[in-house]
Image 1 (spheres, protein in one colour):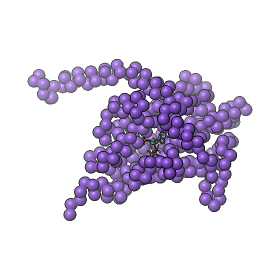
Image 2 (cartoon, rainbow, N blue to C red; image 1 turned 30 degrees about the vertical axis):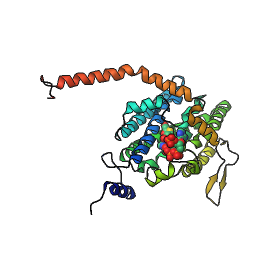
Image 3 (spheres, rainbow, N blue to C red; image 1 turned 120 degrees about the horizontal axis):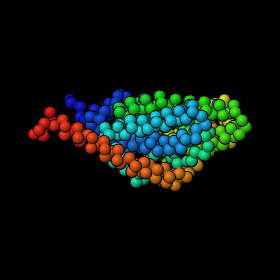
Image 4 (cartoon, rainbow, N blue to C red; image 1 turned 90 degrees about the vertical axis):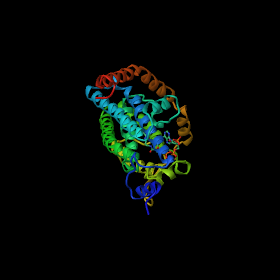
Amino acid sequence: MTETVEQHFDTTVARDQRIEPRDWMPDKYRATMIRQIAQHAHSEIIGMQPEGNWITRAPSLRRKAILIAKVQDEAGHGMYLYSAAETLGVDRAELTEKLISGRQKYSSIFNYPTLNYADVGVIGWLVDGAAICNQVPLCRSSFGPYARAMIRICKEESFHQRQGYELLMTMMRGTEAQRQMVQDATNRFWWPSLMMFGPPDDRSPNTGQSMAWRIKRHTNDELRQRFVDMTVPQADVLGVTLPDPDLRWNAERRHYDFGEPDWSELQSVIKGNGPCNVQRVAQRRAAHEDGAWVREAALAHAAKHADAAATPDGEPR
Ligand code: 3HC
């Protein structure tokens, strides 16, 4: 008996093989992948802003070079991810339009301000650390182009995480004022970093189906726990206190117990009411409008080449 396209999809997922763009897939699978990849791409692009603000004020040439490289990597991640989304039949311009008109989301974490240079280190340590926890399992995601993009992205994210930690280590070995800056940045970014993993499992509408399709390999709460377990020993080595009075080792569970993030804050930030939502989207919109001449010039150049390549009767050579 020949396999139907639907059976082929189900067995490919069940065998832990990859769904490729040419394969049949349920409409809802396609829509879920577009939603997740687009949100992820937008997060990488908007994520350039909070740290990009510090490029002109980096404390040394070395720190400036590292920060420029990091911010440029985020742009690259956005580009791979938009390309992965395009294999599903959507257009990058359409996705950008949805972002700047507020119809598509990006990660809540980038709606918090960066107030001093320690924030650059803490973003590397906590935000990129959380991104790695979330994204390493996505290298085994069932959609091939997304899974492959994640491999390179994760390699670069681990460099980002280590540069952040190294910056913080340097500051912690510095003056009392520098140590206070690191503690202050940790206090501000700890809870928003835990929120990056999404709402708790009993309030996450998409997790069940995304796990069944092997898009997600772990639930939001499982990954949040993994992040806490990984980060507490790093905070000890660094010498900072994580701002959670309920944080303690649970010998029975063999995991750290931790306090409940403020889920109403996450919902409010997702809805567009975080401290920097308006500013982030306005800046993205302005950059897009400023770049219009580049897109027009590139299209005109491509059209001219196509003309030159055509024969006098208009047929391609
Ligand atoms: N920020 C904004 N929106 C969020 C969110 C967050 N932290 N967490 C959840 N949401 C949204 C979801 O997108 C969903 O909205 P939608 O249905 O309208 O799309 C809703 O809240 C309910 O959440 P669910 O848990 O049901 O949604 P998911 O199953 O999609 O899980 C997720 C959310 C864990 C963020 C998942 O989509 C995911 O793993 N995405 C890929 C990773 C990603 O996007 N990372 C961005 C982080 S930043 C980054 O990578 C940049 C790097 O440089 C640090």
